[in-house]
Amino acid sequence: MTGLLRSLAVARRKGSPIGVTSVCSAHPLVIRAAARNAARFSDTLVIEATCNQVNQFGGYTGMLPSDFVRLVQLISAEEKLPTERIIFGGDHLGPNPWRKEDAGAAMAKAEEMVTAYVSAGFRKIHLDASMGCAGEPAALDDATTAERAARLALAAERAARAAGGEAPVYIIGTEVPAPGGANHAINDIEPTSMAAATHTIDVHRDLFLSQGLADAFSRVIALVVQPGVEFGNENVVLYDRAKARGLTQLLEQEPSLVFEAHSTDYQGQVSLRQLVEDGFPILKVGPELTFVLREALYGLDLIATDLLPDYGARPLYQAMERLMLAEPANWQGHYHGSGAEQRLQRHYSFSDRIRYYWNQPEAEAAVAKLTAALRGKTVPLTLFRQHLPAFEAFAGRPLEPTSLLIASIQRSLDEYRFACTGEAPNTESNSTDGGRG
Image (cartoon, rainbow, N blue to C red; front, side, top):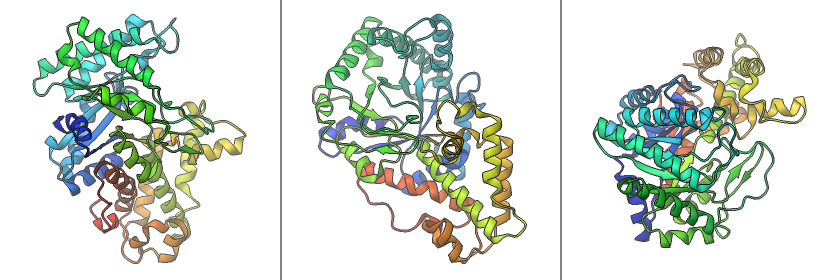
């Protein structure tokens, strides 16, 4: 199962770099689009859950790790994607959800979480114990981080032996953009220095070996670094391969490793392909996929408003605004400015914090109303030209809204696939999937 991940460093050494798209989302339509693409191209689906999203207490999705696995497997089966072509990853597994507690309590819960992930079938494990807990600095030194990562690896190893099957592969390192993107305008991002990355690897290697975890460290396949990519609420910093050249030279000294790049959202296929070629073959993506889904939902909301006299004036948009104002915790600390500026960010920010609300009953009801209203309707080309010009192929025939929504996500995934394989996206539009949704 993890053979694809282990092959990344080998492919790079041979001069034929390949990559993998690591889909980090729990939205059912994102999962379906990713599974559909993997089935369409006979690819392996790499899909991840984060420590805050899914954990032994349910996370903000309400799902245990085993629940997440069942959801992905159910959707994948419907899309004819075999279970053996799915790699489950756990992202930022560590004490982060409980960092307001003392380190002892937080780490005990982190060990329980890692055990739950591995027991459920997750085999790509990002060990992240870099954050301070109560009474500690916000960011810990490499030695403390590595010691705690080794504790988590030991828990993962025990769980894997008990569960049977393949041993986990590990990702170490934590120098990543702010989760979900920065909350301010950004102009420039410095890549991780070669010296800092080397020190992280060396300290982790020494700690793992001292704890009798040499075999586990032999399965460390990647280091998380900052390649110089980021997105804020309103802008994106694109990859500059010249600035990352010093960092990428490290891989010549560590031939068994590659880099994992977080926050690659909105980079576009040229920058993504350069990342893969330069040694960042694990491309994490999440907010972009729900951002393009929201774009399509809002476009359909506008189409229905113009087409159907009884539908109302953008009821989906209105429902999401009410919901986010009633429950502001997921966006309030991230969006700033005047009331009008915050309203724009709530709906249209690249950080896409609206994604935390789609599983709320009011949001689900509004989406259901929208898709039911348009299902089977023939939408004129002129309305697609006005509101969703990229999906003109859906005009002039009975509409299946869910197929359009899935196609919107597949368009982004096709760019990632080009980056990972070098193969141009299929020129046949995903819209020809018809009523499969």
